[in-house]
Image 1 (tube, rainbow, N blue to C red):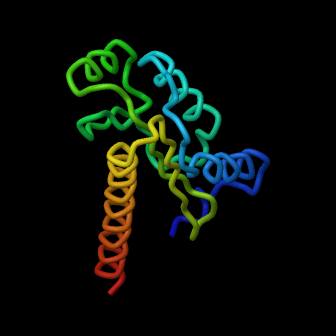
Image 2 (image 1 turned 90 degrees about the vertical axis):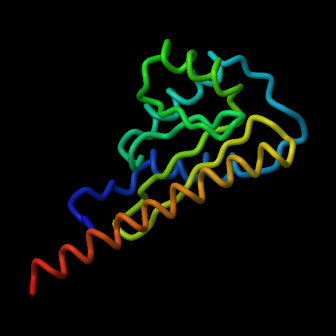
Length: 144
């Protein structure tokens, strides 16, 4: 892995770990967030933990479409109008050179929405590990 890009063990890392742990709990009831409130929550998480994200976190919409935190807000609102309301946030974060975590924040309490957010997180983790395998293979071929 890339040791020089590793975030230091800071208070933001501890805050991220607490945020990940707290966001993974099942909701008793839906969060009543407007699209702009969901976007605001996403952008605040993106900014607060910027040094740890692998890429940018994203909103998961009703039809499983994803909207990254770095997309302009007017485009986000257009995507929401086309793909449905936000149902959660997913983000991959690096805690150390060999330790990653995934944030899965639910906005809805129903099982269908929970599965959609979980599937988005699983797909992102799978893609991440596939990229790491490709990098490792490329590194091995160039160092023969």
